[in-house]
Structure formats: structure tokens, C-alpha cells
Length: 95
Image (cartoon, rainbow, N blue to C red; front, side, top):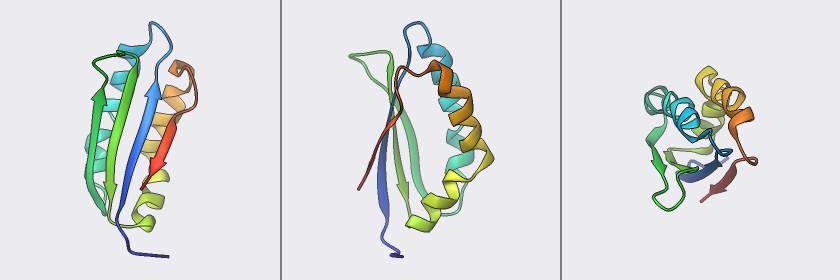
């Protein structure tokens, strides 16, 4: 496994009428994620063109750090809490 840093873009699209609620759920994951070992940055953006669209822009020191992030309680809770608010599955880009 490489120690190469990774950049992640994760796109979440809320169902109509659920955007503000989804933003609250997504926002709860920011600070605990930033505190994780190996997190370089973890930012949430809401589209100006489509208020139902949110993007996480994340940087991780390594694949191992990203893998550990996926196992954290705050992240697994985010996925569970957001599931019914999403129009579709999140789109994830890893670079």
C-alpha cells in the first residue's frame, strides 16, 4: 500500500425539501474528521447553482488514513443518518 496522499471529492444530492437537514447531518462530520490522524483537510461546500448539492473536499495522508476514516463512528453515523435524505448514492472521486 502506498503512502501517497489522496484527494477526495464526495458529492451528495439531497431530495427536494431535505437540503437543510442534510447539511446539518453532513456538517456534524467535519470537526471529528479534521481531528483524525492523517486528515490533511476536510471541507464541505454547498452549490450556489443547486442548493440540493453538497461537496466534501477531503485530503488524506495515505490510503490507510482514508480507510480508518471510513470506519469511524462519526462517518458511519453520517452515512446512516443521510441515507433517507439523498436523491441518489453519493458520487466519490479519488485522486
